[in-house]
Length: 499
Image (tube, rainbow, N blue to C red; front, side, top):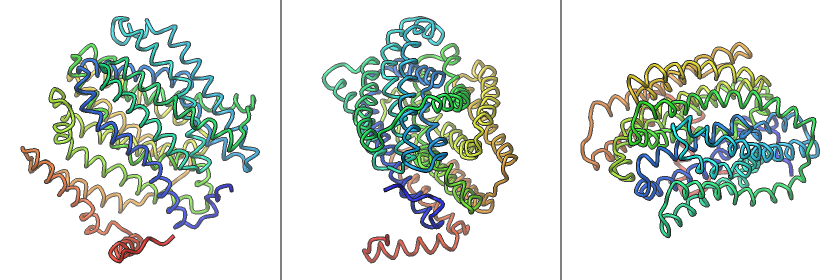
């Protein structure tokens, strides 16, 4: 049975679907972070800080090649999928996006194999890691195809299929890394092998499932249209890559390997701030084309912005408050210096997520080129910041340049998307959220705790205070208050929620 169109749902039913789907999409993301957290002691004990930095840098080189050569080709599926109305009309969209992604992966592997030596000389100033790069890129084709298959699961409103595939990716990768750590010495090569296994196995799982469900076909004219659409998506993604990871090229000149290792770990932890938002975006990014056709699209966008801001603020607060005790408990003591960078990175990426939400309106309007221009404006500012601040401030220069670029991207996105189509926001509620966040951060800064137990206990108190402050400030709407009271009453009475 085809999914119910979003336009046919009442606002309450639609929000219920969004929250339920986002909740399902969050399962593999949360599981991945739990797995990564549990594996952190194993990885940091097995790899030196310099090896950890090398591994992180190799991964970013792979991402760069993917952006240049079509790694996100499958992300165009949403725009073309919702151009068509029936399952029969959508079959070519599904097949073309998946086969196009496979082709892009094979092209990436060939190009990387040929250019591995000059690429590693450019990044590391020697070609000693060329073999690692060639080995890593063998997973490009299954990785790109898996992203296209997960995109199909999202647009077809199959969250359970998505969860199975994404969970398999995390579990297979962790199992492979753990086996290598227990029975062999876990090295950079072992981590790369685990990464290849983590995309190949779920690709082999979801591919046959997609074939049985849709019998996808390939459409050459549609492929050309998708390539043109992806050109601007990839161009914007390349700009975002320069912001996210362009600092690594300069840091290898102006910081030591151990310092970069701390920074890489802090980056991985700080980027957890986008976890909840990404779960929401897994639904929104694929269904926004349909949702923004509704008669109440403006009110829907304003309300979703408020909820998206909440999904960003809460993780940023948690990472700021618990960064030090978490690293003390989970990572090798050599990595203790990473904690100081986490809060700044977390909030920088929170700002980025807000900008991403606004700039999604470019895609709804069928103008991905605007997003590319916006991203490149931010990238130019960020690269200039890297060149100026990294030689003077080292790792902190990279953090500062990234935060400034994301703030500029948010500002540009606010203005440009409004010019394309004016929007509304729930300004009063957003201000109340900012006040509650500032109060929690002020208390955290004013009362530092030295002991591990004190840090955990005080942090838990502060995190509990945040929703209390929102309630006192009158943040919830009357309908939200009523829903919350009803939920509390059902919990107390032991009654399951109404369906």
